[in-house]
Image (cartoon, rainbow, N blue to C red; front, side, top):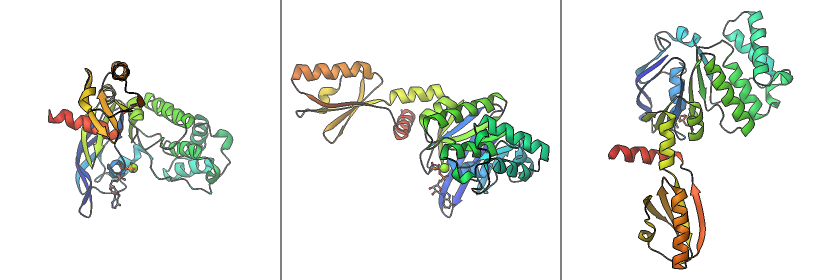
Amino acid sequence: MIKVSGLVKKFNSFKAVDGITFKVQKGEIFGLLGPNGAGKTTTIRILTGIIKPTSGTAIIGGYNIQENPIKAKQLMGIVPEMTNVYTDFTAFKNLTFMGRLYGLNKNKITKKAEQLLKIFGLYEKREQKAKILSKGLKQRLIIGMGLMNDPKILFLDEPASGLDVESTRLIRRLIRKFNDDGITILLTTHNIEEAGQLCDRIAIMNYGKIIAIERPEKLKQLIKSAISIEVAFDKKIKKDELMFNDVSRIEKIGDKFRLHTEYPERVIPGLVEYSRSTDNKIISLNTLAPNLEDIFLELTRGREK
Ligand SMILES: Nc1ncnc2c1ncn2[C@@H]1O[C@H](COP(=O)(O)OP(=O)(O)OP(=O)(O)O)[C@@H](O)[C@H]1O
Ligand SMILES: [Mg+2]
């Protein structure tokens, strides 16, 4: 459904997207995972025909977005990063307005708008102006607007960023439902957990490049191998003293030690035992879930091997 080859986007001499290539199969949920500034939004903006690439091609549903933009865009629903709601329009009117932009007929527009309002739990609020909707409700409305034209491919840029647990869950559940209904989905996120829960495959992106495309199981393994334990002792010790079995690496960070391990459940008792036998009190002990940076490190380390 999506075929991207050698895509580059330069802003002056700065490469926001630096030669990415990937394919998304029909029926997939494909994630672009990367930190702020990785180039995710720029990629989506190219794929949806909002900006032109410096070089490379993007084929959407068989249509080259640059050569055949209208055909390609007819297949797409777009949920942008920045809101595209008209704040003085009601929820209902925002949806119907979108339907008109797509040139749908009036009956179809009303039916579809009402259906989407119900799905997104907005039906009661349909006559409220968008500007007084809460952030979560507004985001649901924005996603609904992306679905007015029954797209074959839905592009979602950070669909659940900054939302509470309930809205996040609803949005994830609906993304899965739309996917079950046959919509191919490309979404961006900087949330590893979200990518792991939602996506069939995940392109891990940094500095405009895709450094790996993985299935969520692989990502979970990476997450596991990037768990660390941070510990501080009362009395000074050398880091080698903590190099137990199952510890792959130790960093000294200020007065703390960060122990990298796949098996925190084995290492923590080891630390407690060490503390007891050396009569050196543990002042603090934390298990740290990996962040994106740890995952990148883990990935690039794996490559060097
Ligand atoms: N129109 C522009 N002109 C100049 N630089 C730009 C422009 N748009 C984006 N950039 C730069 O390109 C890089 C990638 O931006 P982009 O918005 O694609 O990142 P992102 O991965 O979506 O990040 P975020 O997670 O913050 O949304 C950033 O360094 C950004 O400042
Ligand atoms: Mg972005």
